[in-house]
Image (cartoon, rainbow, N blue to C red):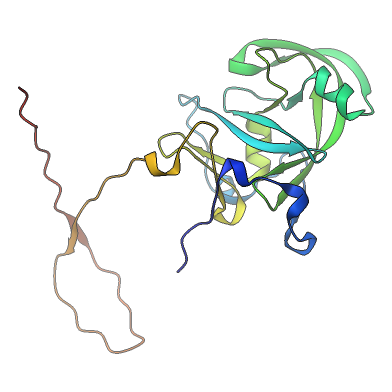
Length: 210
């Protein structure tokens, strides 16, 4: 079994990857991929993650926000990319951090995360604020099969490819070593398998303080 591939932010460069290796997804309303197919989010958890990515092959930072319900690119980025906008009746939506935002235009874009995963989707065009050019909410993460591991500093894509959040060093990720053992002994012939119970030998110790 191979460990999940970790893509460091500095290595994100969609233009250098063999086109045969790129996986492209058309995201349709209501669809879910990956881990989200069988799991629902805890509404009490609101996490955000900033990662390196690209919009229409233009590199930029992307904010993944579980507190937002929509996907937005800024007017500045839309002008820079020369996006063709579609006008809509102005609508009030939940934007960054759940703050109400009014939107009235949309465009279809290609968003690249990691090095080999490309998504085609419609996004709203509006002022996001705080210097952010791209905001992707839960509608994107549901459909794309993307999930956030704040503690580990990782964003997991379909096929368990992972990318490191901006400002994180992979060596700084935290973990817990927890010894386990079986409750009984078994002797298996080659090719045989068995499901057994395990016990956790985890003991909490308080370190003395000076």
